[in-house]
Length: 272
Picture 1 (tube, rainbow, N blue to C red):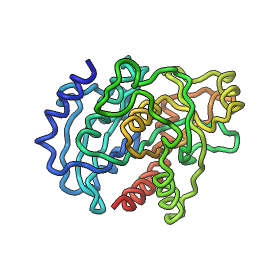
Picture 2 (cartoon, one colour; picture 1 turned 45 degrees about the horizontal axis):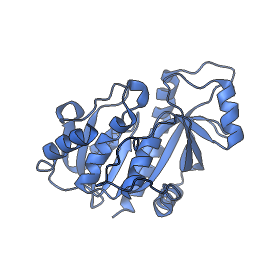
Picture 3 (cartoon, rainbow, N blue to C red; picture 1 turned 180 degrees about the vertical axis):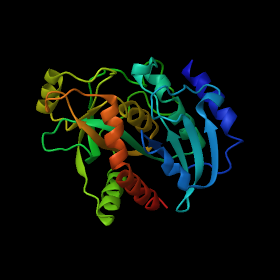
């Protein structure tokens, strides 16, 4: 049972964590070293936490880090979990639900995404203002976990306007250009077909990826304010006459990483 695994992990961490976190940041590929800037750091390997899944994706360190930055008690996930790794949707959000029980009230998610909007370029940063899911999978499936939230949560304000505004302000104050748009989720691990990308563009998607939506659903269920940003690491299938590779995703992510970490840091500073 998912709740049993959440309880196991919570019981393991609750007396070990020195300062209960208020903010959680999920760090995607190439961003993990942002946690190196924390003070009073505590590090837990995913594999050492009872009930936790284990990340299998290259570039995801698989560590949960607690610390302080700009006076904010913060938890960072260095790596996340995906349905294409074989995890059920409810399993992918076990860590987030543990952190919700530990006290987080604000969430910032990051991801790598393909550009669907023809005006985007690899290396762009997109702040997510809404999403659409083509996976038809949800971590809220099955018996409702009443201690987290209601059976039918409202998704109208899943992306908290104040937190999204703080991301935009952090980028503006540091002179970093950002896009804003709609994120579409596919399960993967295969990249999308050109026909799928054309359909998404017609429906209003600006970027596509394989994560983030389950965490947004779990956060909205629990009333946790959320925001998210995508690094556009490549143009989606059919836009450029070249094959898509994970190596390209990783390489472009490294180039954009410093700007993304600057935006994250400015956002955290505004949470103080």
